[in-house]
Image (cartoon, rainbow, N blue to C red; front, side, top):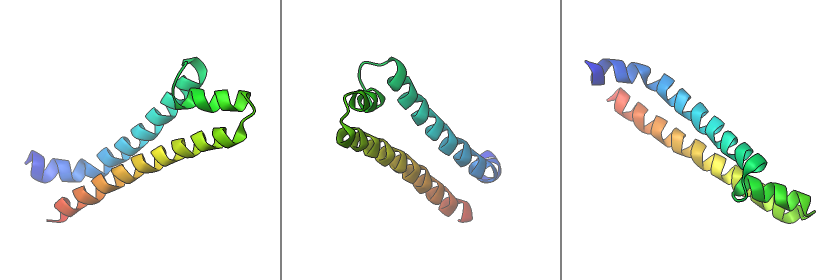
Length: 88
């Protein structure tokens, strides 16, 4: 009953929560690194901005965007995979 009825019905909500949680978690990590860390992607973005090195700063921003896209692609893959099992 649990795996055949409840999980398939709740799956879209689970995926939506997972996607939002990953996005908010990623933004929180970047924000925390920006404000308090001595290492990390957020720290490097701020360091390059303060050093007036826009090319490196935008390179780090591009890496952050690529990571966000990869997380979104991962959740989309999980969602497609789950829907395939749902319809079976």
